[in-house]
Amino acid sequence: MKRPNGLTLFSLAVLLSFIAAPSAWSAPDDVLQPCHDDVQKFCAKVKPGRGRMSRCLNEHEADLSEACKSRLQEMRGHMTEARAACSDDAKKFCKDAGRGHGRIIACLKSHEAELSDACKEEMKR
Image (tube, rainbow, N blue to C red):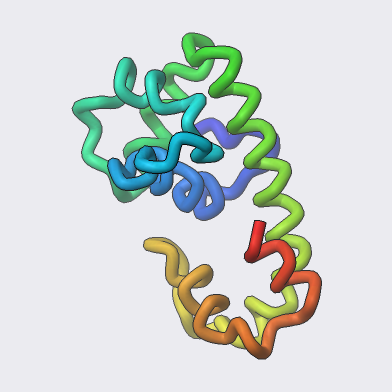
C-alpha cells in the first residue's frame, strides 16, 4: 500500500476512522468535511476497518477533490507533529498497548494528566 508522505498506516487509519464514521459529519465545521463527498463517491461500499478505507482512498488518490487532498495533507502534517510530540509519552505509558484499532491514542487519553505539555497540546488539536 502506498504511504503518502511517510504517513504511517496507524496514523492514516486513525485519520480515516473519523472520515468513515457517520457521526463525524454531524458538525458543520468538521475538519474532515472536505472528504465526505469523496468517501461517498469512491468508498461508500467499503467497510471501515483494517485499513480498507485508507486503501480505497489511496487507490483513488488521483481522483480525489482538491479540497480533500489539501485537507488530508494538512491532517498528515498534524499527525506528524502529534507523533513527534507524543512519541516519548507513548513509549513511556503505552509500550504494551499494541498497535491498531486506536489503542495508542486510547492509551494516551487514559494517561492525559501525566502527558508532557507538548503531547497534551497536540492531543487537543
